[in-house]
Image 1 (cartoon, helix red, strand yellow):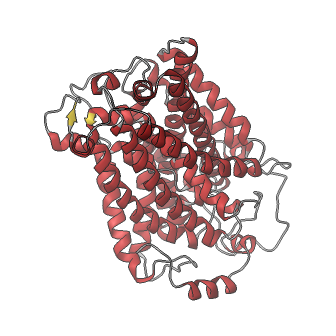
Image 2 (cartoon, rainbow, N blue to C red; image 1 turned 135 degrees about the vertical axis):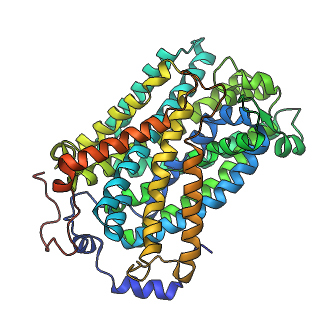
Image 3 (cartoon, helix red, strand yellow; image 1 turned 90 degrees about the vertical axis):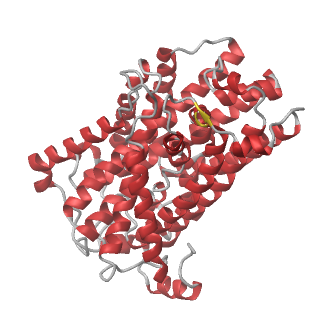
Length: 509
């Protein structure tokens, strides 16, 4: 259903295609980034960003309250299936336009400058929200580990300090170049798969008591304050939809990937498929091993999965599993910073951001957009500030990620459908299946975007308010104002074939 056209046709297309850098010049860009990432590395960055050990684990407590086990498990299966449609539609357009700008460049080429402009701002909001959500979740788990190991008592302020330290770590790691990023992502894949196996294996073999299948797949829990069960089921989908985001990282790193027209689309699809299976095993393993539902929900560690480890395996094993989860989350955040910084670099290269001349600079030695890396972590830190006073801030941060990045996925797919006769696919294409796949993807994205703008708990107060709509409105307002102030004059990807054959790097920038 989601595979590319016949392998023989794909091989003929690749044989006739220009080299990666030559094709990038045809799209209007002079190669500046270092192309050192292969097929596995491209897959690895999206798999690392999706990171079931980040999304599933950090939002597990949210899932226990918003629908409980039934919504978490069946929601994961349903959302994963729909995300495959979105990923396939995006992969096809990525094959035609493999650039660091990714979504906004696709929208610009298929729909015009305004489409590209707003898609870019939405994509940027989602990527920044993802960094904030991933690294803040890692800070929470690190605090829980420190609590078990040394009696540390996490507070909102101390958790935020840990969060800032993690952001700084990821900034420094991303300054060393794409080769280190690629190596870390390759390690991350095996780390994630091994850790899921270890966690599920331990939770299956060690505890003397497990929940029944009817509990895991049939128990509904509503601790949101809302009386309508259907509404609780819908907002409970956030766990899965948040986890299944970030796979556009394969597209953002395409200018650093060899064979980008096929390897970037494959990276998207393989990352979603492997994450779907691994996440289902992880969620099932955790839920079967729950010993005390109320105790898990209200864990003194602040992290419900940590309480499951404690109750089912004991303190020493819980500490060990928490540590490997924290390491996996650190891999995830590092990959997201890489993807976001490439987006900022590309968007600034096309004159879209205030201070674009600074953010588009590339280090001559490492080939890394250093200013873009620092901007990524700085803005992510600001987005997480409400966590200092709001207990529901983390849910809002994850919602920011979903409502920013998910619509940005759908725009290129919608424009490819709208202009399907003019669209020239790359070597990875859905062929005649593209129309059906595309419309399913667009409708699903429209549904979840509206869904995650809604309040998540009742009554709605200043402490429980979902400020994701405020962040979305602020970004759209900023984008509109900046468009009229400077964007309509400064922004614009170059025309096709605008860059002649020339030196492959422009280190003067």
